[in-house]
Image (tube, rainbow, N blue to C red; front, side, top):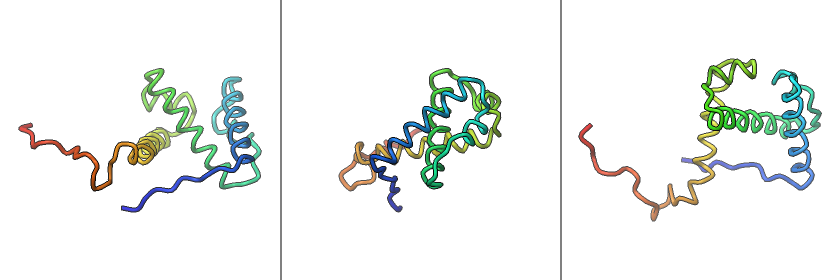
Length: 122
């Protein structure tokens, strides 16, 4: 299995990222639809803009699902996007969490814990 690599931001990219995330969130709080709020953000670097929009959606899905206990369908309706987009984002978010914390947990290393456990009777 290949290791997932995440983009390392420069100081300037980090500032652009933070500003764009705040701008999208602010616009949505003002009643702007998700897609329109994303289109309003001006980021010249298309790769960076894609990462910002993807991350914002992950953050939003996490907040709405885990904090406000909304279903994928409710989130899709609130953001006015397809349910499949919400489900895919949710899966990507969980994958990111696993990849980010894999090393911290010792997973995927020869000395890591065996999380398979004993065979059950289920």
